[in-house]
Image (cartoon, rainbow, N blue to C red):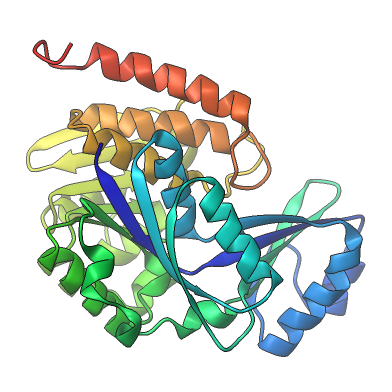
Length: 335
């Protein structure tokens, strides 16, 4: 089976359920917002949260995708940077339990974390993100041997603000013969790195994943036209349109993929998980349409749970559906 290496912000998601907005007001966090916080605030919030019985889950966009590919059975690796602390050790042990070959370098600051506050009555989510050691990953940290032997290389868009790091990473990945995929991750990241993103997509990236807002930021076009424009710059373009499904294009080939049936309660991680399913099917040589359907199947499972870690029953159900789909689409000589 093919192998995949990811690079991204090594973050731990800290999920806390709050009875009201008092905690948010204390730290000036508007309900429903996503705020970046400094080291002092990040450490203070974490110390306050620790006794509250929080849920800790290793996360970060690329890490979520790589966890998915590992569960599918692909040999999977991840490059990131953590602090020498409890959260760094937790992140490493979480990846190890999924069989991920981690290259987790040590930073000077404490480990990055995304503190997620879930407040009544509508389970609204407010984020306080401290990137910490994750931000310390630099081009000089990368070595050619990290990329050797991998078939795919996956990048999260949140790293693109470190342009020198990404440029060196894609150059090394291309030299190692990897198929390179990029998840654009956030429309504001795309807007602030527009020229750079166009350059690396043109020169290095084979597969682009974008949602509606990211696609519009990249092309200044509506989703369907944006898909056509992105496909002009890479081999495979994917534009996700939330509960309405996704669209795929490669050359003149186009497919609309309906969202798989689900009872959604939390969309966190849906895009990351979709990418894992898509890349897994792509690595098996499946037709483009099947790649999108596999992504849709597994994304439908993650939106039914709080957080990004799909439970075992849902994974089993997804794998069964995906096995059947793949078996039905195998060429006659492989069947």
